[in-house]
Image 1 (cartoon, rainbow, N blue to C red):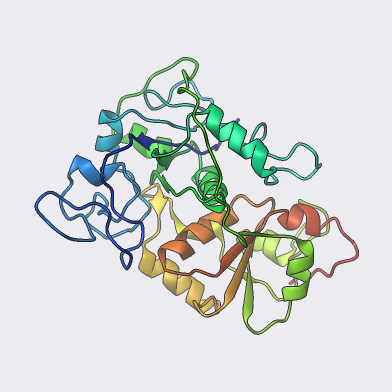
Image 2 (spheres, one colour):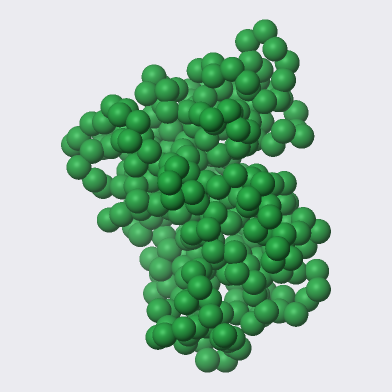
Length: 319
């Protein structure tokens, strides 16, 4: 199974920086009161915070420095590959973290199911979580969005397991050992997921922009439909998740580039943004970067084209 997300945990009591620069700082760099950590101090590197990436560019709440990961106890959710980051755990997005009562794939499960599942993997009060994946960062951002909707803020390891390997970082093989169970209690944030009816009602609304995160052929409806009818939700604009990832650096594109791509399609902070893709996975890349850019009114159509394309009663658009 490829491309699942991952988590790293900083133990309770370790200071950290708030994820948005404009918000209050909970932790500070040694000897400094600042919101951006300009020194690569281990204090902030794994914590979900506002820090600098390897190249010194401020990339916001998108990184968990690998040096800190190597020296910390990680709680990780990754691909079932032959090796992974030492101490990493595994979360199965298609198993305990998807709603098994529907034929639609990857749907958000009921909150009690998620509380039990995350608790079994050691998530609980005071844990600091970093997600990473193998093959793509989409599953990492999917887990990030799921946790965010439950009131739990996590971070994403930029570049995932591939970048970790490319940097010559340590790995281990064998079955994940897991972590002691914890009491995960959700504090749900409303509005982070919407259904088909909400999307249908949003079409043509001037205060809303619907964003398609799929590639060109799927967006335009070229060739046979992968999910059912070929095409897109009428009026939706395309900001493909693939264009928001730097293939050379195996990380996210810069915030400036992401901002330009969204702005060019009319995705502005004053709009209500509904993101969708094929099954509610890759669109979380768009949501992740929109969050970093300060967009607050953003949501995910969870069932996405997996549902929309199969329902002949709703409109579809091509070209």
